[in-house]
Image (tube, helix red, strand yellow):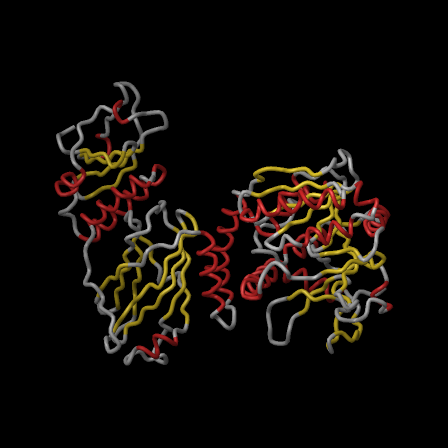
Length: 573
């Protein structure tokens, strides 16, 4: 192989040029050939070789030169389209070996080879402009951008994102246009009636990982061939910040567009949730008292932020023999409060003498993650999912629920009556409702706000869904269904999703008024945190279940029950 025809991009990625695709004759210690990905570049062929696992650079018999010298000698003279193709090819072919050090070298490759376009300078009276407000890393190959672009003279025909490593992706055919009142107010030439809205949101995927904060480049071209580029902002990589920014973006959209949600918001949120779910881990388990080794019921209580509810629950549990026989598992979903919660528990156990365990999570997992983590260490035949702000009205409720659950052969999930502090009904089973002109189904409670003695709220019956604030389910059944779905954010609708999956399997969900508890409701999240995640969860639940929800409601009898001045649908007693 001629001198200067190979260069190392990293310790395990080799770049070389030969006269034909058949000329690659690399060997390890003179014996083992290696596969290469190849690209024709005019009169020669470019190869990228990723060393197999266990093979060291020193074992490869090749004379290599400096990266920049290699690029100038073999690739710099290619036309701009081919150089763009080369940088994209190198990034993609080297993708399986991408590490920060390789990424930094790939930035050098991109900067040597790429065609620099005129920098766009945005001004209020300029005929065209473009800005990327933020780039959010969803994972190493998936990103989400928000920005705006307009051209007063000709249609925009290309909008290309270029990663630091040189991967190129066309955004124009993917993005969703959005109004931008700020651009309209700022620009003296943009005409909102002349064409597409200037704002855009786009979730996109790369063929190769991108590990750096920048520099990203965004290129724009119009129908007249006028081109330009801007530098992108620093990539936001912290997962909570990414999630919060996506919520902020779609909170600005008054009417949720299905294409925006299906193609951009939901794929990004799903992948963020998958990343978060994959890292859920119990750091340690602390036991107070002697928990039963073969209990009938395990009670899983997720605790987020408001740790003071622990004492209120233990005080109510103390006089109930069933609670001393149950396997009570508190799952702390606020790692920052671990010391405080442990200190509080150590002082409360000697007072109330109710045995319990605490599972400390390594990081925040959300409602479903905390419940699933607690269920994974449960010992009971039955699971009771219980919010930390749910307090029994009197002893005996757990035994009442257990006996009823065992009496129903097709039962899926069971929930009791939940009350507000003024003895009005908060939960007597759940159904779904859709406001006039709206496409999404929202959860609704039967008889909400009526007094606990309301006759029809005191009949055990099957219902479409029950709340996860206090839900009993067979542990084997819970595990068979994979627990609570991790697709929903923070804590909304994963309980209803489970209930609908149970119905699909032929199970029945039951409301049991003979057991009554008080629910302080929504004590963990502020409205500012809960509202955007709830809006997303409502859309996702509707998207996944809209056909089945409609079938459930048309199968029910319509009855005119007065509840908050609305007619609600209710199952016949």
